[in-house]
Image (cartoon, rainbow, N blue to C red):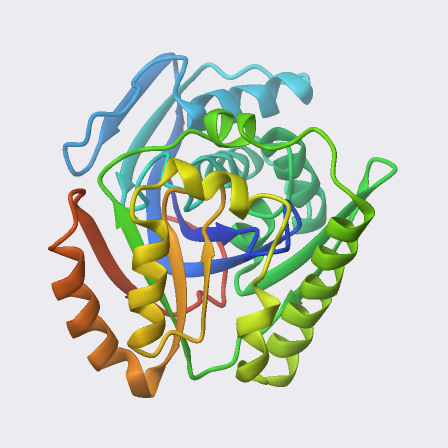
Length: 298
């Protein structure tokens, strides 16, 4: 049996639409083994999960075997999910990455991380969640001619992510449906300049630049309308020490960046404020995960 641990991820990171993401210390775990027949899927913590052929971990494993011309007699999967689904924290990428690692190990193919990363990006549709889930830390990615280039960036050590998770879901399809089909040259320049600034700020530790670096005109102005109290929450976060704020992935989770020195005050004040809102919000203070997905034999 193989034990796999995959981190949550926060994609886009403001202007880095479909190409920049970061791994966080919040994890899904799964235990997988090949069996003589059938599909045996269960939750280790009693969650309601798909337990048949529509389970994303299973479909990823089955798809891997099919592409390799291999037969999957049967499989047993036990899931322990801490990453909330349809909240913009990479739950589907975690399933895909976990499934690929399991299939790679069980089949004996032992493909490199590079090859698995490309498979994951193709299955996910874009690499901004799957690459940090595999590699850890912040990853900048670019697809080109059926290949992929990616660079891992270490987030400044004194930076903490204030993760604001609501009790309502927002599907990627719904969130993408509100986006324009075309953008102006000015919007393209706006986002490319901010994406470069974001990368430079993280690489140099210039945290003061983050306020401008997370600005975006590609997706956040359109998606914010789907999230009640979006502006109110970000305004309150700034009042309590947030250096920058952005929409995590397709949403609805909201991300704030704070220093370790202000984390205690921020947590206290924001927790109290969130209780006054009509929707239920959960606040988690998370550090970046630096290892990425891990697999071991048990």
